[in-house]
Amino acid sequence: MDKFPYLRLRRKRLKENLRKIFKETKISKDDLVYPLFVIPGKNKKEEINSMPGQYRYSIDLLCEEVQKIKEEGIKAIILFGIPEKKDEYGSESFDEEGIIQRAVREIRKYEKDIIIITDLCMCEYTSHGHCGIIKNGDVDNDLTLEYLGKIAVSQAKAGADVVAPSGMMDGQVKAIRKALDENGFKNTLILSYSVKYASSFYGPFREAAESAPKFGNRKTYQMDYSNAREAILEAELDFEEGADILMVKPALSYLDIIYRIKERFNLPVAAYNVSGEYSMVKAASLKGWIDEKEIVLEILTSIKRAGADLIITYHARDAVKWIE
Ligand code: PBG
Image 1 (cartoon, protein in one colour):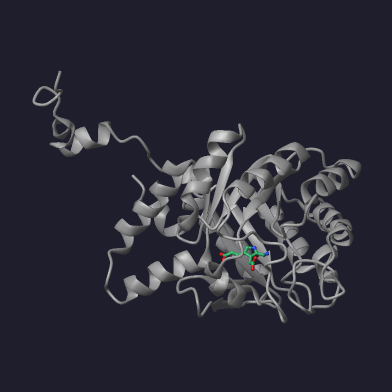
Image 2: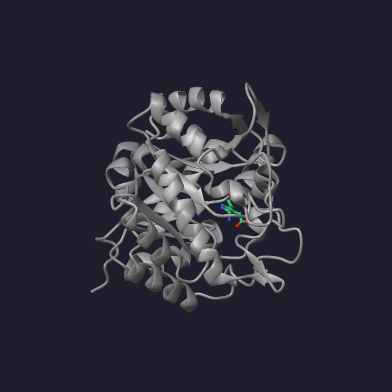
């Protein structure tokens, strides 16, 4: 039998409260993670040119900012450090007195509850800007794993709740889990950037974090954006190696990937709404071409609808004001 005219889908859309009742996906403040950039020095707050409305903070001001962020209702932050000095081995990334280690310790003095996630990568710390140790002109996978273990332990020791390896080295979750467990950090979570594509959407971030590669690109370790089945393999490896959360990055051009990973694995899924995605929205809204609030809510809802349990986004502080 024909469903029409008995079934009328518009019936449920005719009043605002009806539309609210039938909403299938709602984003909540609890879903959002806010990224922060830390720089050396004192009393510094620099606006990031390529990311209007985002700043790099020295540790003292960062601590004040984290307090405000918490009051705004955000439960988790992810930290990126810009070190004093860079070298071939990214030494400051695992130094107990490194920028991130000091920042985490300092935040922890004032703030016990907020979830601190630390980006676990070497590209901000290496003089060549790659995400590992270079041998014969490319990143050496297995040698890099030893360093990643050291970085993880130093971050956990400083007080990070979650470490987030973003270098796309094979075996990184296993190496990090082993290093953490052997050093007494069995309860530190691993949020793995399991499926990270080599993407031009990272452009503004690389300016913010001074982490652009000085030669070549990241295509020998980050994934080709043409591939979806390979994404399942990447996630499967991380699942087996003991990741606690699987992440897809970037988010918007990869909603199909988020969906597939969510269908396939019974772990929480995170999505990183990256710098380029943010800056495009900001630029258009500064020009008056789009309604920023409506666009941001639509974007975040779509990422959640695709399957993300957690969304890392530079829009987080605005979004918590806009979410009902
Ligand atoms: C470090 C890292 C990058 C981002 C997060 N961690 C940059 C890259 O891989 O080049 C990008 C985040 C963003 O664009 O917002 N490996």
